[in-house]
Figure (cartoon, rainbow, N blue to C red):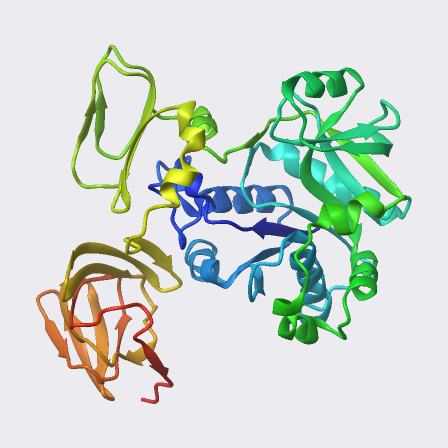
Length: 438
């Protein structure tokens, strides 16, 4: 089975855990059998591989998310990188060309496209196999998943099937309605449109060539920023006559807000936090190393991270985005392909950061024009390279680098260090990369 996972957005509705770099699908909130925590993308990938160990998984995403994907999933997934945001049709066209031209997948094969962040059980992925198998038959150019609605939602579009069969033709589509209208649709047998569908690769390649002038993946990638922003629904789905829908009656939750996310959390407290016995339906998610105490609260979510602190009624938490959009601040935490960093302190002419490098990984070999840096190793073992000179480092070692100095660090074990940046102009763009020859 070929699967394309669409990974977009910054997920600001889950602030302060999400930010412009760390989208909601990378937040580790779900407890595993081993007692560790995994993110939405890790959970979905694990479930796919459990159902189909040979599945080819490709993630279509922005370049800002590549480091987090590599950090959490390693090199086992393909990544179709969008040079810029151009909505779902260009993203899916690019991912389709990537599978054929880069990964060498036969255009006759089918692919399933779905969001990266649904909260589902394994029967959902069995249903994805069913979509792929139905697309293989060639009875329709598109096979959609129609989710049996559990209530008249205003958040989803609706699919009206032509019959009550498990696999049926699509009669029509309806945009997101009011609750009253949604109830009328459901009475007609309507299904939620969760943005999950399957097709043969050659079909979307043909549609892409009809709508975009390009030769192959590389050409499409090169001219991506010139493409018109348009959704896959408008460009393809709503214009397709040979289209079917398959029913899915299992659990399916869109965890896009704190309200829906806390419904899926197994624990009421993650991190340092205490609820007194008068609290009802209260959740704490705390990434800080200080305790949170909640007393006598009802239907509240409390979340704390280096980005900020949220205390909100759960229903009102769905409306935080316009407020968060007004915040202008330094990104305080991010996962990179080599590890992660957390900003500890920001002053006018200095910034202090805790850096964690994963074993066997390293930073880019780079320099800064406008700032000096000091590294203090606090745990682990590794090697630094400063202007071509390599030396071993371990806990207690201090490395000083002047502006213009080329430097990097390699982690032989997990390596933690405190990085102090000093200068009159400290900003993320002050970085020049080099090839390292030892």
